Amino acid sequence: MKLGELLRARLWVGIAVALVLGVGRMAMAGPAQPAISADVSTALAQMGKTLSAPAFSFQARTIRVYSDESDQQLHIEHAFKVTVRRPDRMLVEGDGDDGARKIMYDGKTLVVVLVDQKQYVSLPVPNTIEGMLQVAVGHFGLDFPLADFLMEAADKAFLTGITAGREVDTATIDGVLCRHLVFTQPPGIQLELWVEKNDQSVPRRLIVTYRSLPGQPIFIADMSDWNFSIHPSDADFAYQPPEGVTRVELPPRTATELGAKP
Image 1 (tube, rainbow, N blue to C red):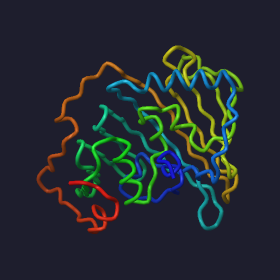
Image 2: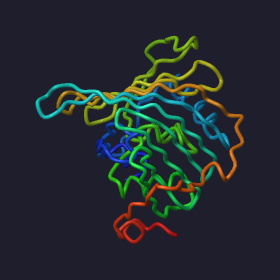
Image 3: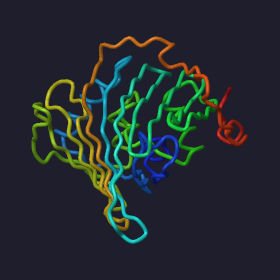
């Protein structure tokens, strides 16, 4: 299974990495070729070129709509900032209904900080963002719904598992004209993606609807403040635990079973 499929094959579990998580996209069983319209292909190719930049940051606000045991719809919200420096640095800082979180990746180690609990966990990971996510998903059983936009080939990552895509309309988001794209992914998943209608084609909104799951849960992300002029240093991605913050040990399976190198 490719990373793009794995990242979307997991369902939400509310633990440490929750600030950048939502309901995952179920992996497509077969390798069918997607029926993608020409205008969508062009827009996504522009997006992929823009997001292959050496470094960038953006902000996002996410809402997950889900059903509890009594089929009552509930919501959980998070707001965060993501900073990426290719090929092996990532920082996520955010807050939400379940508390503040921080994720730091320095090319060797992934650190997840539970700010309110004054605790953190860390584990050795590969020296690429994609490899790091592979280990994080495998260990925590979680997905990063926005992970496609962090890959070097963001357009190809996003299309993993997609069987059809078309442009349905245009819309204005925060004063910017955007293309409204809709995609289909079996079994019963619909994705709506809004990208700016310009040469950058950066994503501004993502909505994933799980029509085949009870209650048809929804994941919503609004993205803004894209910045491709940043120059983060190594120190920006390194974690130095403040006094009073304790480390929580992870099971030893992390390094051995997932193939991570110290």
